[in-house]
Image 1 (cartoon, rainbow, N blue to C red):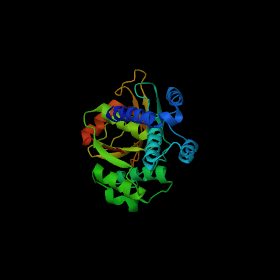
Image 2: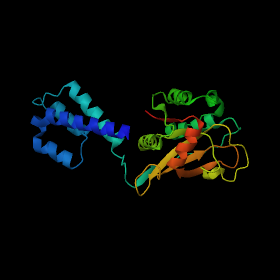
Image 3: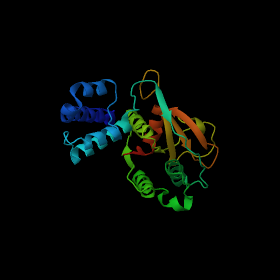
Image 4: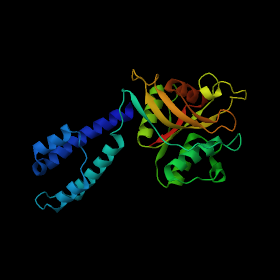
Amino acid sequence: MRKIFSVLIILTLILSSMSFVFANSLGDDATSDRINQGKFAFTDAQINQMINDSEMKITEKDISRMANYNQMTADYVNITPFSSGGKTLSITLYQQPTPTTCGPTSAQMVLKFLTGTKYSIDDLISIEGASADAVAALLNKKLGTSKYTYTNVSNNVNALFNNTIYSIDKSIPVIYNILPSKTLLPNYASYTGSVSTGHYIVGYGYSWGVSGTAAQSTVYYADPHYSTPYGKYQTTAQNMSQVVTNRNGYMVTAK
């Protein structure tokens, strides 16, 4: 919950400062009404009106603050921790062409969702066998912006689930680096091949358990496996945390 609590603290500080700066111009009642109604962001029309009102003395710093505040509101308004519900993204599923191209194929799925372009495996092959930081770096290079980072969530189901929520709520798929398991992942239950090597899969959604605990909640994933485990599946956040931990503990997630 580190990211969510940090955001709540930041939003509180911004609300306080915004209320102070604009109290004289919007009026205390107007500011209070916006907060009480949950309408925290400022519209373009309101910003333009304040800019054109010479008595308000709006500065460039104020405009920048409002723009940043609007973006933060948009980014985090849909996060609903410790409640039922969830979100899934419409990922296009691709199958890896060879046993050693799970990384490039996972990147291919992510980039197709975010850009609409299906990159060739040959164009993405440089990350095969690479670490999570290399996967994040390649995605950022193709996207032309620093959307992704990587983090270690080893033995921490809350960290894995919170990072999944954070990314999915921003409509950014995650990539899990896992060691497949015939007992923890449903698509490997009847698989007769080896599960002794690392593997990349794409996380495209989550749903909260009724009790609201991360361990009992669900993550949805797209597995690009070259054989029968290929497809879209779901498992508990606890199980996903375990297969990620069994590999090296890393996932690629939104910044």
